[in-house]
Amino acid sequence: MRPIWFLLMTGVWAAQAGGDPFAAERERMVLRQIVDRGVRNADVLRVMRATPRHLFVPERLRSLAYEDQPLPIGYQATISQPYIVALMTELLSAGPRHKVLEIGTGSGYQAAVLAQLAGHVYTIEIVGELAQSAQEALRRLEYGNVTVRQGDGYKGWPEQAPFERILLTAAPPEIPQALIDQLAPGGRLVAPVGETSSQELVVLEKNAAGKIRRRNAGLVTFVPMRRHAQ
Ligand code: SAH
View 1 (tube, helix red, strand yellow):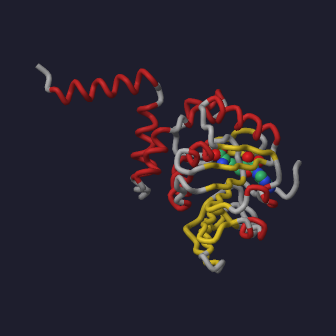
View 2 (view 1 turned 60 degrees about the vertical axis):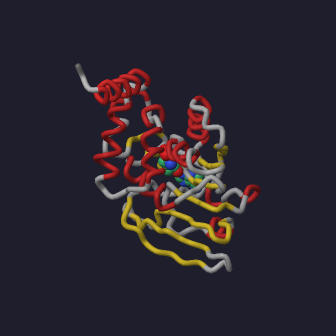
């Protein structure tokens, strides 16, 4: 007779595999790409395990959804590499009482990840078609606490400010002052910053008195933040 733990594990595996054919690939992604590179926050790992990345990439690229790379999503935009999404999510450290602003909705994947950790996610995308398709994907998957809007991220979202957390997923040459102004006291902003194809990942904190401190957390590669709607 097989031991009971074997039957239980087989049951769990069968349920996962039956419900989601990508569950095993996603588990491998989390262990090999994310845990092995040092992301250890349990909440971040939980949401990376739970988020169906394959439903945020173009259908013809679905088989590559859990590979260790960014993927093109059209309009010169990319869905970031899974590790980078996990790393930035860990650095941002959003919690259930936080209002989060994301600049660069793209596919909506990073917003979906944040939605499972934060109170509400407001996300701005400059390309109308991407804003629309991300909104549809997020609605279909029932992430009810995300609001998508088409617009220019350089201006932020003054009507909803202040935000406890702000994440940029497109790289400006410098952090826009409007976004620093819309960061709540005690808040944190994470952004790729720089003019070249490789940028510094900056973590900026505003203390209760409004004083700003920033540190660099490594090099990353993001699409540049555009100046105007194109
Ligand atoms: N977070 C996304 C990846 C975004 S790629 C995801 O999870 O898929 C960067 C995105 O920023 C692109 O979609 C690009 O169109 C958008 N973008 C570029 N400049 C912008 C600006 N000024 N305001 C808002 N979005 C911008």
